[in-house]
Length: 173
Image: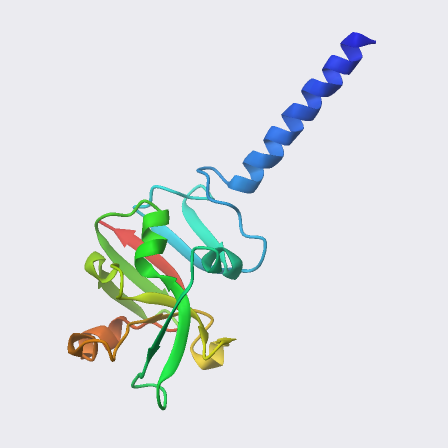
């Protein structure tokens, strides 16, 4: 009887450990519970699949959303964008150097230097004016800069880096 109880306890502990590992992914990043909206590949230290870090909207929101108010060349008037700062996403993935290739749903790609991933610079926006962005509205994710904050953000270089309908970031050396 005692042997059976011990075996049942050991089996319960083993199952609990397996379930925790399955939820966390191979390197500690939780697995998404909703639809995947962003995949990050390449030179990243933290993954939740064998070769990538995949995120649903809730995972991005949980990283500490921030809001910026800025005008853009694609919208009318000042807009309010809420999203995860790019630097915070890269910190979570253990990225400290390299370059980023951001790719949109339509295969448009832009290269961003790692220097754009600093506080007060680029963010991955998931809300505009308090609402989620549909694909038709340049969503669900859009790389946005605080264009009104400094003149250098109002340049063709930064406009080209402002990838909307973002679906993937590849971190390269």
